[in-house]
Length: 248
Length: 248
DNA sequence: CGGTCGTTTGATTACGATCAAACGAAGTGG
DNA sequence: CCACTTCGTTTGATCGTAATCAAACGACCG
Image 1 (cartoon, rainbow over the protein chains, first blue to last red):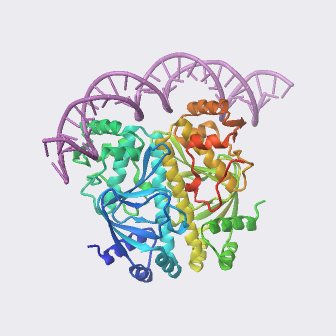
Image 2: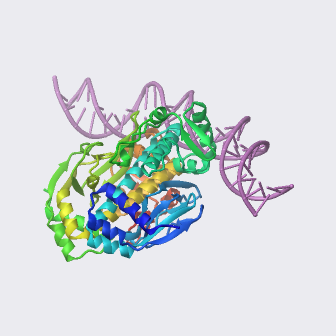
Image 3: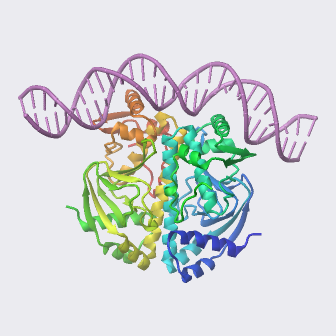
């Protein structure tokens, strides 16, 4: 059962990350109405073209965003984890430009846009924090553009793995440097702009070089230092306050 | 000479695009202090790692954002034109994650973050509109990820050309469907994740097929319909209110 | 016990990268 | 005004990474 207070606390913490907020802001957030929702793996939260009217907090589980070309090729454009706030293009009043689907069973807290609007008018700092949240998302996307546009297959995959490791750790899910996002190799491929066959081969290479270990669908980083260097990974684009993940 | 009122009007129009704003919002915007600045072609507005404290309105000219991999490969992550608002990661108080450089001589209006902050606290709708602006930027980046990750060279270049044509038209710069962004082929390559040699060959192919015409550094679309289809271009991700550009 | 889904392997192909050099236009300085 | 440089475009030849095609394998599930 999803705990309303837990979800809102999670949201508040996330917003606080970007901008100092006060007790009144906290009160405004904690007073927001919440519609709990569980999404089974594979189900859609939104489809491209729909116009949702909520903001969504991901309380547990993983979601991913994707879009398709006209001839059916898929590209994953985002991976979301615990604590992420998905704004669902809501204030644009425009239709969604991509799909959001559950990677695993996920618990969500939906907040109607109307309520966000009222809270923001009363406590403008909340809107500023959400603006900041959108800026961070854009920063991640810029790094993805660089990653896909200018790194080779090995670097690309390594980079994604590093990013996920750091973000997982920031979300309190990091068992050391391991990675608990259960992406299939095909999904991994769709995230980095390669084919699943090629991803498979690169993963085997990484394993044979002692960079990673694999358990089922999980990838565990064995040699963070070398991984980081192969990935050309510099976590500053994630705009974290706290020091970035370092080798354990 | 840069006209203060012109710049602020431009900003207000842009913000209005996302969200209905009232007379008081207008007054707040028009009262913002403005620091005019001219950037010669090639000069930097910000460099990665710097922490600017302004918001910037591009009044005329073109800017582009880019970042580099560790081994010096460059990827262009955004192209900005007249009327665009660059937020410069300002509220994050974090350092910039990419460089912004002038493509052509550009006139800018800089607004200190402090002033934006005051205006936003008084008129929260302004912050909501800037949030929306950031969401649109993210939407464009998602499309770039798809473009670079999943389309072949021809499609990629065609798609970028289409996007620029539509955005130029929206910025009041569209002489029909022509394109007035003076990108070198190397810059074009860095925007779509290819080499300049290959871009050159694709452009020649496009020309020979009657898709485009070229004048100096400009690309002019000759056959919008076919271009759009080759690019697999659907402008909805730009989140415009008005109907998208159609064949003249 | 099939059946589905994802992973793995092998063989071949091709798209775009890389390397190298010439060319053209614009700008600079003697 | 003409060498000379610089920057960008163009062309040609070759190479290599990743795509494609095809099939087998393994795990999980009803």
